[in-house]
Image (cartoon, rainbow, N blue to C red; front, top):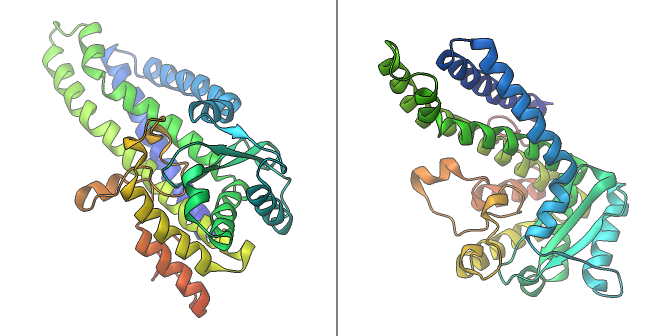
Length: 303
């Protein structure tokens, strides 16, 4: 319940940023409600497109091959076994030929889901670790995180796209009139603050859902330490072969979908903009599950 309330609060904050951007656009054109209406219409259209076509788009972007049991019995049967334990319909199972070890889930919900592993993941992990990763991805399906993150990414993307072009709108709306200087100043400030605020909120939503998927996935397998071991291996494997250094699509546009960030991690301020929590924090929470330590708001801010 706390995780749900936290995600809801973050979505309300994202909606507020979205509405304020609409108000600023309306100010440029001397009609606040027109600006808000334009933003709402734009977001609805983009979200409908994402809802209907996101799965197909992501699978095509990463050149995913949907497999049968005969083509890769190891991966297929692991996913099948976990799906049965989780009470989920059997999703599509796919492999993308990429040496960087990673995995993601996509789809509108449990009845329209696909889980995907890279070729590098299959090479790097043993069966228990692979099961831990697939359980994490199926937890995203169970929790409908894919849809939640698609909406967050879409709204955040709209804010970032329009916010970064506010100065164009300021000139189009009559930047040479008596309010021109104020409009241009507002556009410059908005072009910096709106995309930044949307990104921070979106990243916070994503990090919270990752903790939840770790916890739920570990319950599916009953083996939290297998996932912990996989996460450590993935962090090292991605550092050696980040997707941004591969010949395939680097996957950075879909960073929130992967179980680990597709590019090598960096610390400092840049961690604020990460779509994922630190691997050490994720492992610590999985270890706490094994030790029987209750996860509370005091030791887990994403509870």
